Length: 299
Image (cartoon, rainbow, N blue to C red; front, side):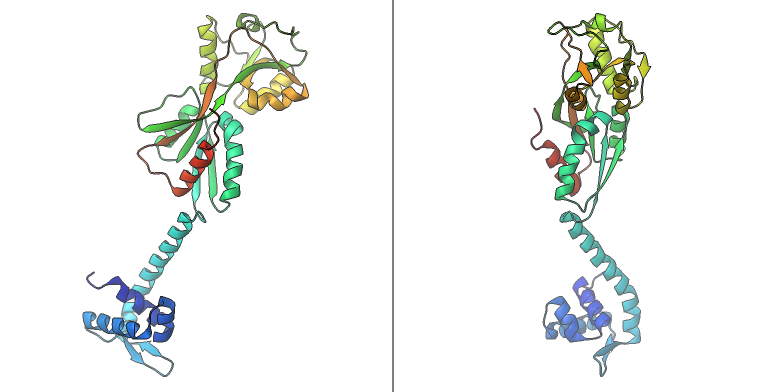
């Protein structure tokens, strides 16, 4: 297309309002400029586009033919510009987040509350899965950001940043085990009690298995549940003991409903991390959520 798009834009508004003055007001230019641009367009196309009428102007047959094609093109472009401005101003858009259950419970909910207060017009889609599946979905482009707990295996194309430290504790229903103050249990002692935990497809399960392995023990599981939300009810009913992040257990510890079983072996800390694909640029919404996630993050 050799003709300047501005000519077609001015043609569109003159044809739409059938008035040079009205078109000039909408375009924030003077009427003589509108007239001059229309004459230039007519010269380039080699035909007359408008004729004068009592009400203003009306399209010639050639002008009608051109308007049938110019109008949808201009309207589509203007709509695209409006949507782009809305996205840039965070008045529109969708944020795609992948997460694991523990990352959702310990970090994502609080940070999402802050984000929604600041950017209420941004839609948020959250998918929860195991860490390995969540990372696969990130690489497939299904998420922009991914919150997971360590340990986690990632490829070179994935960037990672720590958001928060996570301390797991071993808990039981209060009174289920006779606990003596300042006298810790060994992992070997704990093995005599039923254990509830997550499936072996989770990074959390692998973390506990590694902890026991380093102590020369096998992590034996009596009750396996599919969700972190199912561990606490099992423990609160006195059916088993189990490991759980301290942040999740805190309300029940404060109420006295459950108790921490002190261990002689030190449970290592792990982390909640944010992942993103270095080969894919983040949307503006994802950038803002990243800022919320990493600001005031726990070392």
